[in-house]
Length: 517
Ligand SMILES: NC(=O)C1=CN([C@@H]2O[C@H](COP(=O)(O)OP(=O)(O)OC[C@H]3O[C@@H](n4cnc5c(N)ncnc54)[C@H](O)[C@@H]3O)[C@@H](O)[C@H]2O)[C@@H](O)CC1
Ligand SMILES: [K+]
Image (cartoon, rainbow, N blue to C red; front, side, top):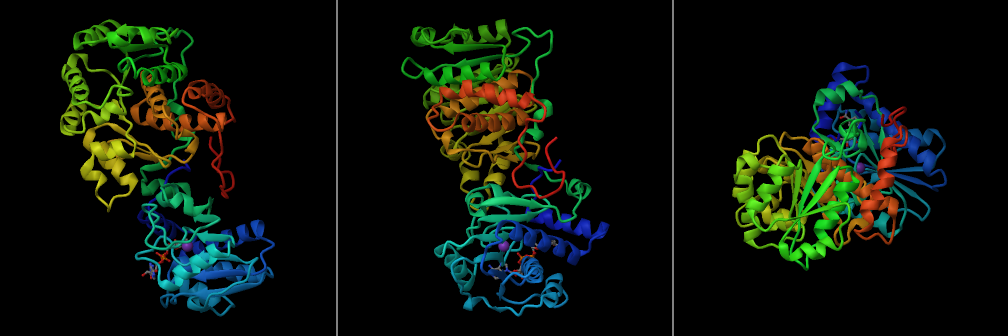
């Protein structure tokens, strides 16, 4: 697999294991890293008048000295600026000694228009906010609008969390090594990185496997082998049945969006469970989707007993009142009727904000995670206030903590959606698009999750697939998208997923032969 995401600590472990296992020692890895950056500069910025390489005191700076040396040897005009100097005996000190250029102090940094900046100040080792001199350099590059190639990470950005410690560089391209880090995908990091290129510096897949990373970039290769393909002898109920709870007469659209999405993603049967007051409005809009009156728990149990749906969607359009939450708790309390799969979204989450422990207890009673919670920022804060307020935690760590606490797969939505499972696996989505910032798109996501659960996809993979497919559908449809368009836009996504060779290739991979299979 080439879509693992390594925290800076895991990357340091990978470096250590790679060096122990050979054939590259630390300085050779650094030379490989610097060579990859220099190759990118030559390929993409050949017309730069001068390349200004900014070097810090650690190994990130070491990479910078290698870049400067390689570019000088190819005849580029290069200027070197340094903050601090490498520790004697370190790989960075070797790189600095091998570099034919003399560095000037970073505080004196200046440049002319038409230049290129290579930012090799701080990478994985960033431990405090940038100095005033480094901050000024970042600001100068931004003010002069010169392109910036950041080595490993834009300096000032935490590779762990995607947060900035004070000022940070805005990169045009970030070249990182072996695998991406969370900071490349989590906001605001993703915006600061520009295009992210992953360079192969000789750290093999076996080393990455030995690190045991449990976080992944959300790409189809992560879940495609579990994606449901109907058997030849399938019939409608064997393809999975989804029940979607509808709101009152003036709030029924959300349930229908979820229902339509569940059907389009492949569930063989979908039933809208409707209060009697909403039956006629639902009936006037539904054709292939079934409709059933469900005012009381008994009526819901009647549906569960008769139809054995594989997944329920609870929340969209139901209203935030505590009674809505209590209804779900009562439903889950009857263990023998506990649904096989559950997607809890929107008001289903908000209505339980006053008693989250009761929800989590019920989800733990369901056993193996069979529920997917899909909170956006506000819903996450309401349901997991203690976790949300912990400023030490990244979005990735928050999603993981919430998933452990609730025993559910948590889809923590946003432009950088994180999907986390109670067993510690997590995925960060990277194909999100602002086109999805439109009313009702979350209802569609809930329906896709339920449709996949109903077809037997495990909850973590279902959550990951749903998030990726939802965004891909929006991108394929393009500007002008409203939520009603999404279910139909799934057709093109599904066709592409089924056609061998039609899968997207992760953008910017420098590693030869590293494509999704
Ligand atoms: N073998 C390896 O470990 C490899 C590491 N590589 C490079 O090494 C980098 C990590 O190297 P390091 O762990 O040395 O970390 P960095 O080079 O990112 O920075 C560490 C040094 O900077 C200081 N520092 C941190 N933040 C500062 C700030 N804001 N102001 C002033 N000083 C600050 C620290 O005290 C330390 O001396 C990676 O990002 C990557 O670029 C690559 O060369 C590939 C191989
Ligand atoms: K950097």
